[in-house]
Amino acid sequence: MSKTSPLKARLPRGFADRSAADIRATERMLATIRQVYERYGFEPVETPLVEYTDALGKFLPDLDRPNEGVFSFQDEDAQEARSAGGATGKHGEWLSLRYDLTAPLARYVAENWERLPKPYRSYRAGWVFRNEKPGPGRFRQFMQFDADTVGAASPAADAEICMMAADTLEALGIPRGQYMVKVNSRKVLDGVMEAAGVAEGAQRLIVLRAIDKLDRLGLHGVRELLGPGRKDESGDFTKGAGLGEAAIATIVGMLDFDSEAEETIASLDTLLARSEIGQAGRAELQMIADYVTAAGYDDRVEIDPSVVRGLEYYTGPVFEAQLLFEIPNEQGQPVVFGSVGGGGRYDGLVGRFMNESVPATGFSVGVSRLQAALAALNPGNGEDAAGPVVVLVMDRDRIGEYQAMVAKLRHSGVAAEMYLGESGMRAQMKYADRRNAPLVVIQGGDEKAKGVVQIKDLAEGKRLSGAVADNAAWRTERPGQFEVPEAELVAAVKQIVGLL
Image (cartoon, rainbow, N blue to C red; front, side, top):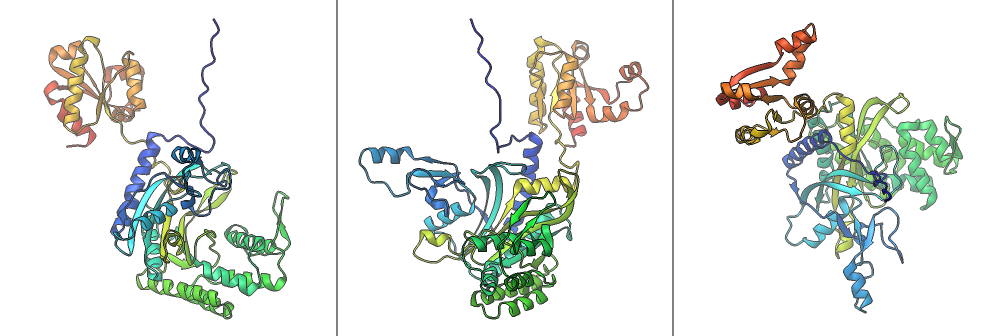
């Protein structure tokens, strides 16, 4: 009789398991973000993980499969209807895991437009999925936390989103001066492209990608990418946009501004004097700068013409929350952490479902990336939370009594469990240590006969054991361990775990 090989345990590429510590850290972070969003008057809403593919905007199905970028499958009901000769919508039979939280919100708002307050202010957190090649720090499933205002065309809505992003970062423990919310306008970028004579198409995309690399490459590197191209330190060559010197000077002139909003906007005014769309974007940035200054946020929100985001659907102001402190990269070199969230105005997205234009603006926090930033900023803060009190099983024929102890602890508000394995005391203590238990409860036959229990404070025991000379002394002194009457068990445990 041949033995079959066991199934190999393996995690799909681009996905990650999450430990208890990871989950708790995420929940704490989400709770903090939620408090800030609700303080601004946003209310929660939840949409499903699956949407019709055509609702996701740029990701529309081709003849046989949706485009790359989303995980998709065919609706069985639609397949059956088609097989039976029934009518189906052009795209209705394709379903996809959501790519972001914005497109599902647009669908939800359009579907419920008549009953929603306008403007509609909402937030939502959840998993999104990208059918893309995974890499270091690049996952196919990750969490976002969004807040959006739908139905408000005023730049005041954009300014408010930027101020809320700043308040969120500070609430999470990122000090002022170690982050900045940067603001630009898609209209300004379009105006500069117009002034530089860059037409729509592949060349414009190369130009915008070059601008987006300003923080990493500096003006000289961007200038190279706008021209013939750039060779990096490894010798790899990146082909440039092939612009002439006059066009390069126009674009670099947009980037080479002082960080003061007044001077930056004045320079944009001169540069975009002949561009109608560019002037419209400049006016929006001026109003946003005025609003954040009036509210006292001008040291946390700045105008930055190099910000490039979401070319597929952003129509006006765009925002990016950037962390300014340095962390070591994979080679141990210090690098600025960079973006942990962003957003912008997307006035065309909701209108795809309606016969009217609906303005909208929003911001998305990259939860996993921001969590990594917080861990880098405060190493050691992500340690496991205290686990449950563990009641050891010393006598197998008294399991019911141990369960009764656990029940009393739980009913008093203490997290507790009875050891359910088959091992002896040493293994049970090791188990309690791995569970990060604050203490263990011990009652063998001798303790039972005297009506007492032994309580071993594990944290205190570790602290005191450093002063014990040898193993024999440790066994005699039993640091951190003491005896109490069985009737006083709950009070003694609550004292140690901080519930009294």
